Amino acid sequence: MGETNALLQRNQILKKETALATASIYQSMFGGEDGSIPATFQVIYMTGWAPDPSQQKPKRRGSANVSFEDLQREFGTSQQTP
Image 1 (cartoon, rainbow, N blue to C red):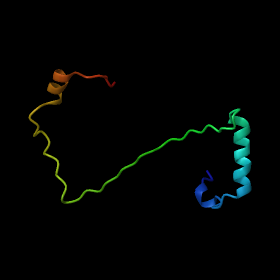
Image 2: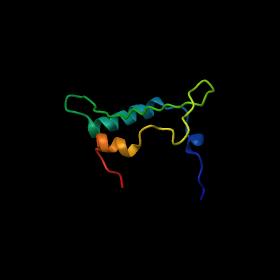
Image 3: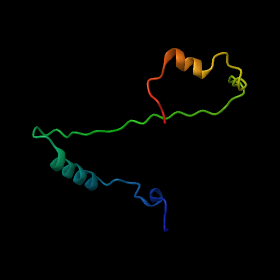
Image 4: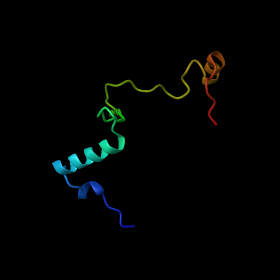
């Protein structure tokens, strides 16, 4: 299908002229009358870990003292999943 990794082919340097032109276009499209430029962004947090011998090991299956059914009966559920 002709797919390739776009990151390998992109220019590593953002030229000053490109940044200024982009800012000017953004200002004309979305800028406020007072000269402000609204912007939004998303923050994505990611965590990861790898198992280590010093970590606690999970209990064996079926070793619980309370069933999920008992917990649901006691505390209810706020949302049903299909």
